[in-house]
Length: 540
Image 1 (cartoon, rainbow, N blue to C red):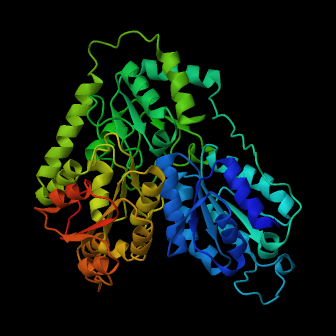
Image 2 (image 1 turned 90 degrees about the vertical axis):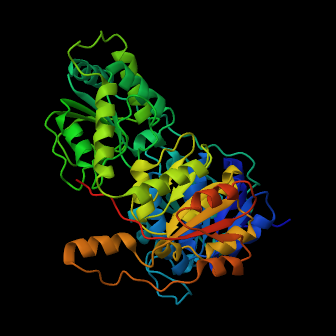
Image 3 (image 1 turned 180 degrees about the vertical axis):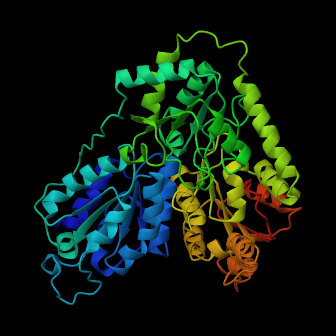
């Protein structure tokens, strides 16, 4: 049988361990898609390229595998960039394989090819760890192996490989790819003298606090090592929005994830030594630039650019799990703490009490009940995906992930991740997932109702319909007295889901929990629509 570059690509992916591919066919990419027909790869057909990447992102987050996307040239490739920004910011391993115009059109020549860009590769550099263009089929296995490894090396992230149309279609003499190694470098460990100094400072601290960022959740073994460090230090642990779930919320040392509450900011500022792992102290974590530490800050991160980017720190350039494991060992001989020092559990409990007292004073019972009802409805081990919507902003702090994955679009803050990512996760994990979107964000991914139906994905999608961009309505009203361009015409979501042949229920705040719970006893996609207007909690 004659083989071409498309076959070499698909064989390489199979040899690397890929089992699923997400994407949309396109003229220059037909060689890729024809090759799938001759392989054991399962193809998940999205309706918008951006959503293909979101689906691969969700697949990667839940399976721990690289999410693979096939995409066409020009408009298709560019449409995917917004979702790649989220994967890049959230450190999710995604391999984007996009086609290109034939080789004679590369380099800026004006050949007039359909979809031609002056430099497609340049468009991807802002939102990927690496980019490459393959000009000969013989190079495909090596380039893909390198990209596969790069995507997974801490800090993980998306990578981009372009293969021109003629390379995909030309007959090749390359032997079938049956084995392909892509060794991933061991996680970076801190230097021993750095670990020793950090241990010394933490052991001497009177008011130590641990701040767990998204890097803790992404690093295998880091949550357990972080809890061990906190227990040795008897220090309270505050989680960022991205780090929510790093420590069980029921743990006595958990001070919660109310990172936007001033009481939490005060606790972080008052620490004489603050151990921050896997966070850059970004906009949300810094409580919108108001965080001003008075003590020593020790910052651990696998991304060198993060260290000291917002505050003067003792920087530890290392993977979270490696650094915390070494630190726990170095602290293991620390003696008992001063009897006069408050216990970490007391500090954590006091913070949680003060935060919840403030919430109870804001007339937010409806919002708190909604989160509680959804938490009771969704199984403990379910992966949940939250779009950028008021319910999700509550979930950043109020949702207890328990044994399930907690996934948000908070890293880059774009709309549309929730539903397609939940589809990809359901396909990859074989378990029902749960997605939450507002009516505005839902329209970014509404076409993926067809994907969910086509692939019979076990996903429950809750659409909270408040008639507009709710958080922007609040922001503008607060800043200017009234909102502009936030109110939206939208479809009847119930009838629309029915048109796709998907079971759907309209709900009320009183019934939504029961209805969502019922979907977890069924198979295939399900939609729940909740018409309601939610309010955000005050930030200080």
